[in-house]
Length: 116
Image (tube, rainbow, N blue to C red; front, top):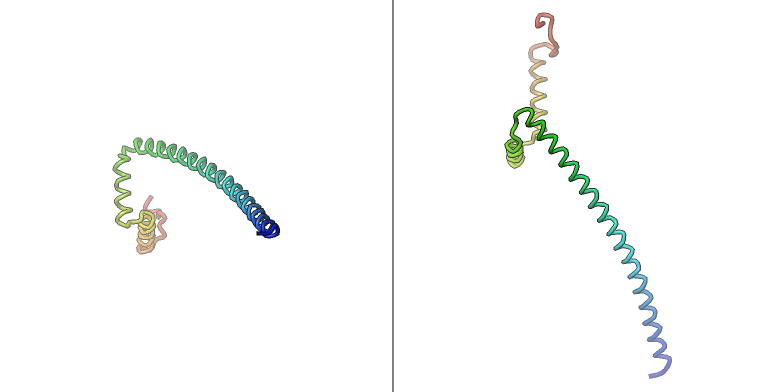
């Protein structure tokens, strides 16, 4: 084996090592970016959990004021959701039913002087 072929092999190894070094540095940067993103996401999740707990506390206080059992209300909502009932659609249907009943009697829904 000649000295020239050894030099070529050493050069190939040096080139390969340089490419690997660059790639490792790129991966390190990506890993640091990912770590920062994970930390930011964790902080956001913690903030959302705190806000959710505050809202839950407020809702429970309101429910207690109105003599509502929170667990029963949540259970009913879960059951309705599982059955495919959509509370928003139900509320919109009720509102549109009210509007159509107002228009059926020939009034605009406002109180007439006779009603006062």
